[in-house]
Structure formats: C-alpha cells, structure tokens
Image 1 (cartoon, rainbow, N blue to C red):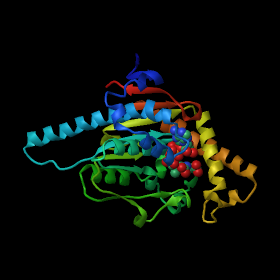
Image 2: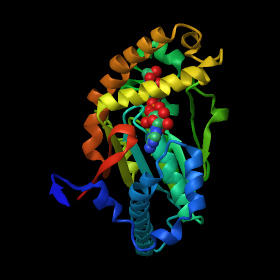
Image 3: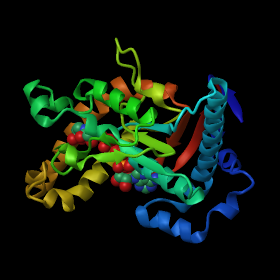
Image 4: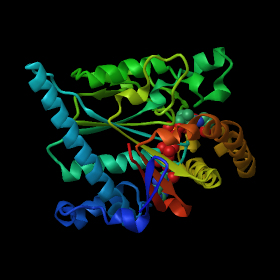
Length: 309
Ligand SMILES: Nc1ncnc2c1ncn2[C@@H]1O[C@H](COP(=O)(O)OP(=O)(O)O)[C@@H](O)[C@H]1O
Ligand SMILES: CC(C)(COP(=O)(O)O)[C@@H](O)C(=O)NCCC(=O)O
C-alpha cells in the first residue's frame, strides 16, 4: 500500500483482501445472481473484489456513527431521535454513479436485512425546463446554476433531522424534465440514505452550508473522460433503440431520424455540455471524496483511494 497525499492507494488485489472475516457467510450465490439480474453487465468479480470490502467499510463507519449518536444522547441525557447515515456518490454524467448507488444499496440490504436503505438522486433538483428555458440556460443542464441547491439543502436537512416523511423530487429522463411532486420519492427515516449526483461534492460560492455537510461518507466514481464518453454514447445508442422510440421522449426525433446524425448530436452534447461540466465543476470535487473508485475499460475498477483524514 502506497501512501500519497491524503489518500491510501490500493490496487485491485490489495483492496480485495480487505473483505473482513465474515465475507463468505454474508453473501450467497443466490444473492450474487440477484445482483446480476439488476444489471446483467455487472461483473460478479467486481462485486466480490470491490464492493464487499466497500460494504464492510461503510458498515464499520455506520456503526461508529451510531455509537457517536448514543454518546451524544448520553451526554445530553435526552433522546436525540433517529438520523440517517448519509452516503454521497459523485462523478461525471454516465460514469456509473447510479449503478454504483444501486449496487451498494442492494448489497447493504442483503447483508443487513434489519437496516433500511434508500437511494435518491439529485437530478430531481434541476429547475424545470420551463425555468431553464426562460433563463436561457437549457443547454447548461447539469451545470451548478441549473440546480435548485437551496431546495436540495433544505430537503437533506429535513432528512438528516429525522423527519418521518420527506419528499424528494424526481427527474424523468424520458421527458427530459422534472416530474410533478406526486411522483417524487418519499424518504421515510431510513437507517442509511444514498444520495447520488454530479453535484453532491460541489461548494457553491457564498453558500453557508454545503451538501457534503450532511454526508457521513462520500464516494467519487472516476474514469478517463475519453472512456466516459464511450459509456455515454453506448447508453445513448441503447436508449435510441428503446426509450427514445416513445413519441413522448425528448429525443424521439433522433430515434426516428438518421442514426449518424443522432450520434453526431450526442457527441456534441457530450463535448459541449457534459465534458465541459466534468472538467470545470465535477472533477475538481474529486479530492473531497472519502473514497475514489477508479475505473478503466469495461467499467473495471483498477484502483481504490481511501482518504486518510
Ligand atoms: N459496473 C458496470 N459494469 C457495466 N456497465 C456499467 C457499470 N456501471 C455502469 N454501467 C453502464 O454505464 C452507463 C452509465 O451508467 P449509469 O449508472 O447510468 O451512470 P450515471 O448514473 O453516472 O449517469 C450505463 O449504460 C450503465 O449500464
Ligand atoms: C440530468 C443530468 C444533468 C444528470 O446526470 P446523471 O445524474 O444521469 O448522471 C444529465 O443526465 C443530463 O441530462 N445532462 C444534460 C445533457 C445531456 O442531455 O446529456
């Protein structure tokens, strides 16, 4: 293990050895199959070698968090009430944040069935298209000014304070717009909450409080932007053949039109919007994460960096 800057750096083999003593008892082959079912492209080797140690680390931090809450209650001689352990997951558009979030969610639930785990994404905090259009920033979707960060902070505050039912707005990639509140997600005092989004480690200037102030653990999913572009275009190609063929879809015109023109448009969107956003606003937040999962070709994780302090 090499220690550099503020991180311990592990290659894949070193990280895989940190699975802990109970690894085999906790997860069965049937569980692995259910992981596979949720995304058939997930490598089971990644689950064993990367996600089992990660789940163990998260659980150790979770136990420590609970102990600290008990100490606080003891000190104050009062019931401090429930408060979730919150995990933030950041990284580029299409790097695999939501896949990482869902996988970690599933593995935690499998290993610790008495705990409740919920996952939310921050894209529901984008301003509606009508507002973005009015402000002339529809082509800046995903950039800091396209999110209602005040609302995100309020919602996280309510969740962290143990509010029994907090509504998290949702985003629909189909219509390319935020959904009405009736279709939001209700966060109901989970033990662990995973919050995934490109902006979760950002520090907006003049803010008094940051999203990451609510996190007890944070992960940055990292990869070479040239690879992420490939994954973005792969996903675009898949959607072109499936979701985009729905006439209500924002990209429907491309699904029924010339395929080459559609890909040319997707490459432009990648270059002018998502890559620009990655370089200017997302990548600079990497050094704030507690853990960096670095991916190479085919989403294979080849290095894990763990923050020292
Ligand atoms: N570990 C993985 N193995 C294989 N494919 C993956 C993996 N993680 C993500 N993908 C694929 O990469 C694309 C982007 O992943 P996604 O989780 O949707 O990214 P994000 O939430 O960061 O935009 C999707 O097509 C997804 O199926
Ligand atoms: C809604 C998003 C900003 C969020 O990204 P995600 O959480 O899916 O990684 C992104 O998917 C997006 O729509 N970007 C704008 C440019 C584009 O159409 O890709």
